[in-house]
Image (tube, rainbow, N blue to C red):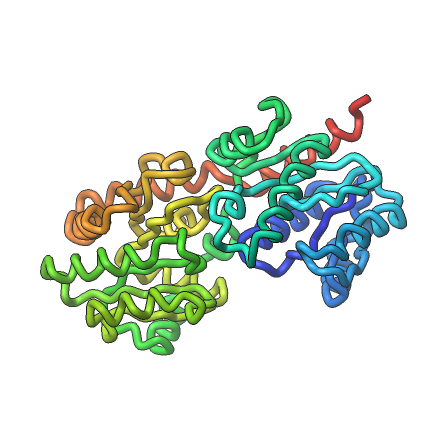
Length: 371
């Protein structure tokens, strides 16, 4: 079987984590089928190293562009693909072979303000309809995302398979005390801190987290900082304004983009991890923190209760006072901290890229052999 996968997001965060682990585990698990990875020209050398049954096919058209509507089908025809896996919600209308699509979430339809305009919103809705109705199978990453897909698009529930994500190996590796000290010195981390990791788009709810942090300090927790990672902070001036409003300039730090190695150290060094997101298709950061032995506070909405279960403290993300009270508990209740850390380490073992990719591979065979 000749299987084509759209790997143009190989180095992105979010979907990029999915693509990287998918192709890496396919390279370990499957030496029989041929894989053609549609990629950026600069990634051809990397893909060649995956194994003799992996072939790069360079495409210059960008993701979510009109050009990909022709470039991807042309590449599939040239590659003589039997099956195409689109790892996000865009499946070109002219796809010439059977296809599988992974829809991680429906965020562009639930938060249309992230799109540049009405035309982009119409395109997102049309792309979602094509992906759900023209693919042979739909994969998604949580039961919550499956419910969103079924609510927004007219497809049979039996067509949608839930296959969970897992965390990168980098968050399971041993980190030396010297590495921790180097990162602490580089970022001048001499005090206790709460960590947030992820992007800083409005649905991540960082503004309410800053409000909650202000309330936490009013409860007497004056010796703790809030560290916020994630790029594009400059695009969301409301976050800076919230810091100024509460006079938290010396206590809230925006660290921007960080490598996974640096982030792994911060997870292990943090006193607590806060992730009060309003919407997640899956939500990897809480699991990354759990794997690092850090107690987690997260939201009681969307997919997060499904993913973390009893391994995190759940709060109402719309209520800054509830977030603040949760942080207070997490920082002051040693028994709760120990229980959540233990539950977190156990919960993380329930998610495995190897097991998930085996299920994806089984789906490839099922779709390829359908009459």
